Length: 467
Image (cartoon, rainbow, N blue to C red; front, side, top):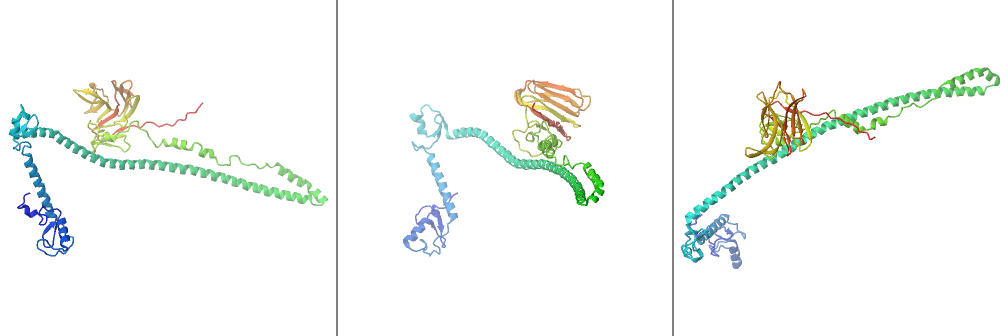
């Protein structure tokens, strides 16, 4: 920015560049502090230039003029700094050379001084070009790092949004699962209370009928007793005439069974409350299932779609997912959520009519073709060909009499064996032998719309009695 005259930016009171200028109604501007001091000395609010009376004791700030003054001061300071840097601080000569030993600009007098004996020099423009080229080379990695940071930030923003979506979806699935459990428990509660109410009604009716029978018995006995007592009060001759009949009546009453309480008349509390929670839990196994492998959606390729139970996967529409580190680098694949580094593990997969799939494990890093990559052991069915392949074994064709429907994957980590079986025929397909050193994760690949399903295992509840 250039200005026609420094006077245009000078206060008429202090004769310096405006500092926090204010403007009067007469359009003259002054430093705010200068104007207040002027008015305090003169004891009147008049313009120091035109003597016009000011209408306000607190005139408005002149922001446009303030910005011009700040820009002018900045440019003047930069020019002064440039001029001072362009001269040698020791000899006040122009800096025309660059000392390669001291890595600083020098003048011609400096070059011939003892301080720079046997030093190497370059013209300022050549040295500047060399140094600029060096900085450009150093700047390139920083620019690449900035680009990477921006990419990672974009992924982080996408991840943050995805976290909210995941949380909402997961919360909804949790609520649905608990709704099923609540519904089951509510139905079970109602059924058991209904059984209790039926027993209560049945036994209450039984006791009611028993009470009615006892009331009739009591009434009959009471009548017989009154009749006998009345006979006892009669004249002797009359008593003797009726004695035989009275005695027969007493004998009949004695022959009747004595009244007894009915056994099992109370509510069978033990039946209703005994092991109640265990019995309900045992019954719940009919509505629950257990999968030996749960798929991890955070490892899945964006083209794969999983069931809400995370036990089946198929190819689908491309999704916008974060590029998180856990996501597998193998296309169209997904890993199990739990890895194995010891013991024996087995899981069954229904491939059905899917014509493009791979099953196996992914895990340890191995050196291949001069680079390190994840170890993969798997069998593959594609283009009507059935093969076995791993990062430690060459590809091998496998016999296939008919398309497989269900496959069992069996991992014996400690013995270093990964085996595959035809579950329907109970026949062996192939076994990899390798000394595993790292955690292995179940691996599934597909580009087909027909889902691959991990089959649930049977759930049983057993009671072990202490002997």
